[in-house]
Every structure is written in structure tokens, then in C-alpha cells.
Length: 315
Image (cartoon, rainbow, N blue to C red; front, top):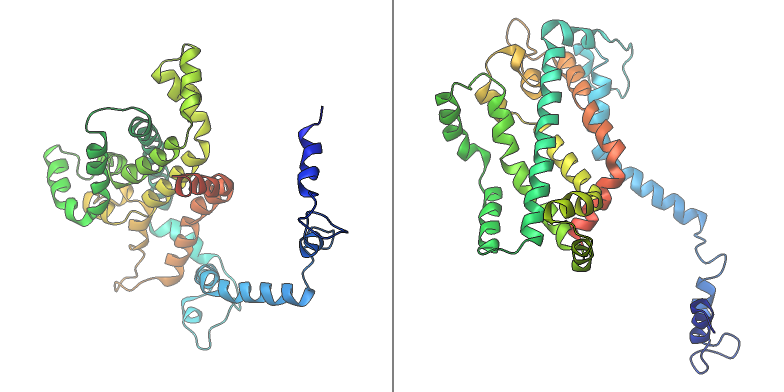
């Protein structure tokens, strides 16, 4: 009995489809599959990496300028010609960032708000996305369209009604508006869309097999669907965390006490006695602000890219 691995060469070597010396395979194709098929000339690699390096400069330079300028005195930041590295690096601006503002408290505020909203959004979007993708009910498409319309409404339009609502509840100058309005706002709508696109790709036979094993809808979601959705959840987590981490309008409207500020709001408060910006201190605080986002992306970049591929290309 012939195995599958033995039958494949027989098809490739079918007579009449190639030359006498390499039946079934074109000479050029045979050469392309040889040991040196992927060999690329050295000069072409050099040109390729040089072009990539040039194209990367506009994306790398702002971050480089932010980090190096945070180590310079103010007079050197705007000196001409500009320098790529400080003549005398100093960390005084980093120390000032903690003494001029309650930076540790503000850092903690941003971390726990972003973590709370990210976890809440992941839970809500996973349940809503699964319901829209796998459960058939009347008005399903219309309701999903209504949810998607939420993406088209800018946050500036809803900020005044939200302020009036939270003010009537006595929640202004607390973190509750940021936690509630963000968890159930635009990030959850986008996350629900991503999760729905992923759950649609799951085969129906998988659920049918789970039902034969006696699993109900809740256990299918928890034991079957969720473990398979790790990559999509990683994409949702990074999107949501970055969005909440960079929130500026909502904290500015709802928060008034410096101890309750989040980091984007706190960065604007580093000013001198005349109201001028303290550029080196602001850049030092901004450098410390981007660290959590870079760490999370570095840890989850593989799942993030796979999640985008599964929810975008297969959806």
C-alpha cells in the first residue's frame, strides 16, 4: 500500500510535463528548489538593508530625540546645529519629574486605570463578539450595526452629556468616569468587532462536537472558544491598553486634583514660574511614560501580529 509521501513524487514526475532529465518539473523550477535557490547576492542585501535603514529614520528619530533631549540642559535642546547626543548627560530632569509633581501617584493612576479598562474590555468584547458570531437571534445584524455606529461618533461629541451625567451622580473628580465611560465606550466597540471576526472563523463542527460531549453554551465559550482566541485577545489587549494609556481629553474634563491626574494630563503641568514649558523635565517624564507600552508590545508582539492576521485576513 502506497503512502501519501510516496504518491506525491509520482505526480510530480508524471511523463510529458517536463523535460527528459527532470520529468514533471521545469528546469527553472528545479533550480529554484536547489540548495542555493534562495541565495541572494551580497550587494543586493546591503542595498536592501540600507534602504530599510533610511526609511526607518523618520520613525526612530522622534523617540531618539525625546530620550537624548531628556538628558540635556534646556539650552542644548534647541541649539543649532542640533546634536544627536548630549555633551554632558545628566539625569537631573528625571529627578525633577518626581519632585515637581506627584509623579509616582499619577503613574499608578494610569497603570491601574489602563489595566482595569483593558481587562473589562477583554471580557465584554469576548462575550459580545462570541454572541454576535455564534448565537443566532432575531435582529442580530441590526443590533451589531447599531453597535458599530458607536465607532463613528467622536468622543468630543459625547463628552458634554457624559460630564453632566457623571456630575449628577457626584462622580466628577474621581476615576469612575474614566473607568466606566472607557470600558463601555469606543474601545469595547472596536474590540467586539475584532472578537466577532475571530469567532466567525471557528468551524461549526467544533461546537457540534462539544455539544455531543455534553457542553452547554457557557462551557463551550469558556473551555473551547476562549483558549483558541488568545491571539485575538492579545490584539485587543494591546489596542485597548494603548488607547487608555494615551487618554487626554477625558482626564482633563473629569479630573481636577493633581493627585488624581493620569500621565498625559500630568505632562502638561511641568511649567516654570512664568508658565513656560520645562522641556527637559517634560521629555524625561514622557520617556518614562512610554516604557509600559513598549514593554507590553515587546512581550505580546507575536500574539498581536497573529491576532491581526486572524481577525483581519480571515474575517
